[in-house]
Amino acid sequence: MKRVLPNPLPRGPQHYWSEMVALSRKAGFTITDIHKASSGRSRKTIKSYILFCVERGHIEAIGERATEKNRAALVYKVRNPRAVAPIERRPNFADDRGRRAQQIWTAIRALRQFTIAELAVAASTDAVPVSPRRSREYVGTLARAGYVAEVGSRACPGLKAHWRLMPANNTGPLAPALIERGTVLYDRNLQQAVNLNAPEAVGRAA
View: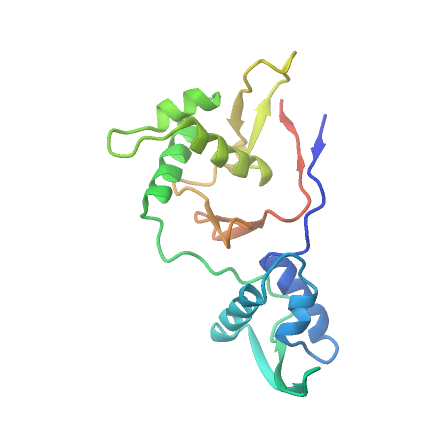
């Protein structure tokens, strides 16, 4: 039986990019246009993403438009509407959070199936211990992206869940990284991103 996640607020890189592409087919867009179409995100976040896209050459300024306060606002246009949403990645994965995620991912790939408690023990080292809470958070993120699935079904709520890595998503040794303020899971092996704000159906492994 599949469990469908609730519809998210319209935000995150994939949403921003979709709005920019749609408005580029018309008269272009301003930072305010994307901000108004992105519930729950600050203008600063939207501006940062747009400037990142400009810096990388994904969008370009094509003119100006008067704002409601009669000020000049730059109008932008996406250069390649068929391109995937650009993702601003972390420069490295070497902090404690990144090391914990790497250790958890390595343990997940080594274990045939696991509980959260078993995973925390397998992932821990003397230098970087991994708590069950951290393991649960990372497994939850992987589950939302379809990387891991719960094995079988629990006869009653008190039983511990068992998980396993989906074979098709055992993409390599580098741990998928949670970026863009938790809205995107970036697979560093495939160099692909999964938008966690998109509705996802989470099923069970056979």
